[in-house]
Amino acid sequence: MKIGLQTWGSHGDIRPFIALAEGLQQAGHEVTLLITCVDSAIYESVTSASGVKIRVLASPVNDAARAEQVGMAAIKISNPLTQMKMLLDECFVPSEEQMFAAAQELAAESDLLIGHYFMYPLRVAAEHAGKPYASVLLSHVAVPSAYSHPMGVPFGQGFLWWVSKLALHKVAGPYPNRLRARLGMAPVKDFVTEVWLSNWLTLVAVSPQLCERQPDWAPFLQVSGFLDMPNMQLEGSLTAEVEAFLAAGEPPVYMTFGSWTPREVASQSENLRLFIEAAKLAGCRAIVQTHDASACGFVSDERVLYVSASPHHLIFPRCAAVVHHGGAGTTQSATLAGKPSVVVAHISEQEHWCEELIRLGIAAKLTHRRSVTAKQLAARIQSLRPEMQSRAAAVAEAMAGEHGVATAMRLINDRMKARP
Image (spheres, rainbow, N blue to C red):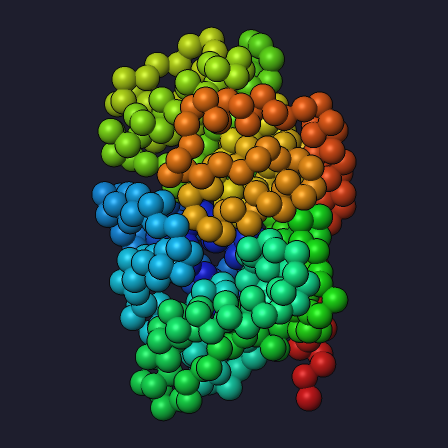
């Protein structure tokens, strides 16, 4: 088959699609992957060993300064719907026209389309072209159920989802409906079930260890598992400096806010002070990921090592724990490494990931970036007891037996064979 994939977002939104594209290409399909990165141009250099045709569009959506302004504004918004609308307006809409034009070209030339669950331009293009469309959810928080709700209340979830879907559609429905109107298509009436989800096939790209399938999920909703892959070339390797630091003492705590790490010197310095003071109060060694510690006046020593980046697959297994923002990719990488987490959530979806880790007994109590203090963060690190380490190792062992890409490919093939 000719299969077209399209994704948008940061590294955690792009890496799973590269993994799936590579798997499909290696299985004999002709695969094209369209990438739009919100905050970086690094994917311009990505090539595929198996022959996936990779096209990078409108990347970065925002330059570094604007990306940081948007990120800081998002942190201050407590209402998740207001937060989502702001991120769509600032990080998606500026590249919408380019993504939609490319999506229409992709739909015309492909037998099957597979999109990131926010990729409404591809969903519209696929439907208009009469092609099957699979949606990939990178978080199961988006799946309505009478048995669960993001608010975590123990009753009334069905009613809460009914209200939530109405509110979500009011905020997000106008975005795909603008594009549908241009093509003479009827508007969608429910953003969740008609945009995020696909009743042809929706892949929930989350480890079954983290994602509990609910009894009322429709058959088209299938948990594939984490779409993982070997370390990418752009992610690099462990440097001699990192190796020396690891060998020089007890396993450190790795600290990163991933794509939410600020670049501007004043904000970056504030972030570094939070991490360093927390590590000092907790009495632990630390590897701190930041863009440019030296520009902020911070220098590595025997207790703290600053890195601009380090591949999670290689570094996490050698650390004691991971302090992170609660992104989908980082959460599952830390879990796969068998390490407990301390989550400092920046947006509402990240709160959900922390709650799932807490449910498994492998994370400290949730903290929020807009209010966290060094003392609070240190207390969370100190709360990671030995039993959490043991539990994290057991969850990692179970995850190691999962093969998300292979499962996703099987589900896609089964669905295509079932077509009339």
